[in-house]
Image (cartoon, rainbow, N blue to C red; front, side, top):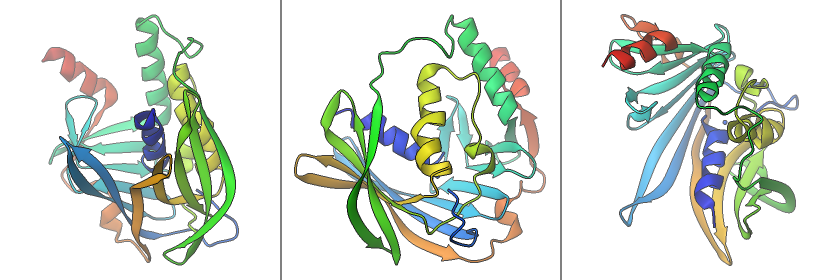
Length: 252
């Protein structure tokens, strides 16, 4: 089964993670566990999401490798400022706008002789809702099945609730100029199910035959006011642009 790609899609739905008029907009802290394996050893890592009316901070237990070399301490989405901040070092952070990212990706793939209309052999991801329901942390959820066309017998089971309304802002907007594979991730299921579908995933399972394995579950949902410092760039941190970052990499 091509679970790696399907799981990657699911993590993008998180991460990279809706809106519902039936509930008040969510402000608070969500704690998630991600389950995986490393050299045959099971691993559990924690991912935290802090949400306010116009900002989101996504932060893990450990630093993440972004763009090959940058060690990121968190991703800050500032919808009020129309930008993304990647916490790179203690005294530096990478700042990028949505239009800047679109232009950069389009330029890089253009240099590589590819475009958003390029053909791709990547299997399509198909999804459908079932009639199964489950109560998780007091929230009613509905099962969404995500299948890869090259292995339809095995799939992801995503348990979604409309009870958590996060302002995704820029993430809910269409992304332009993206190569076909990336476009499927950004403007396909992610938009339909998550950002515009008014749902939030509380658990994701990999299903292979009769076996189900949890690869993500939400451990805590705390509706409360978030300290402003949690969704701010720390004092003394220098913001560098995408252009500055790429230039510095070329000079190394």
